[in-house]
Length: 376
Image 1: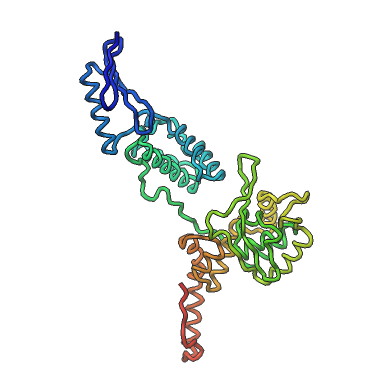
Image 2: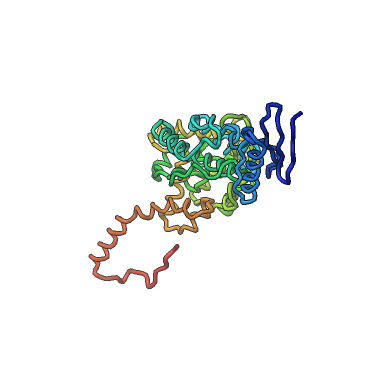
């Protein structure tokens, strides 16, 4: 008859084979057996003492969870985390399929620093986009941070400096003449979308989310209150709040847009929504993208629709707008994101130099203002 004994922490019992098995209740409330059996009861007790000490010191590792595959643990993380939006979850699942294949079937404890460095070097050498690879790295790091909190691993193996940074590349900016040409070449129903992106810096999802009531032509103002989300791998479409409170904002409309927007209200707006398709349904962001691509090809302009947002903010920066002004207009919560557009001011350095030469030729500083206000 197999023998068993209990101690204050855990239990040991003798199996029919004569070897001893140890078990304990882990901090997560689950009963766990030792990964192997022991020749003597003393050995089993000694193992339990060590486990008890690790738990009391806060260094215990859940061996059962640590042996779970990254694929399954990451899927559960996406499924059960209430703070993850549907669009980001879709992006993460796509990145897992396209860029994280080498990690998916490894256990959590098998993903070490060298493994991550080897994977990262391999995907960088491949054809994947740098933004998607940086997203994949950040997702892996986030998942493993959760594994640390769950006591599945001790340290995060995603520790490559700068690997998760999404280094924004310089975006092409359309000139004022190119914007006018795009407006001329695009199907009239979509003209207002181009103008709101290029001169007001609205995102495509923000444009599709505009209600008629959000446009106030008396005050030359448009209110961004929601973002229209369309999943790539699902027919699901929905409205959601902007990512941060700063994204919900009023944007002043340059007065020269008023005739175009008034025409849009009269001819192409719906009863409730500012942008609708020919059938009266909410306009899809992809419909705007396709119409813009056709117009871009006709005009010979090499910018994407999202580049129009950069165009609008670059033009705003060139007027002397401060960083705070740009943050408010663009709906950014951080200085880093908004400061990307201040390069437009730097680009005026040659114009400044030319004006200094004119000042030298005049030989007087009389036209200069008596005081200078520096905007931060």
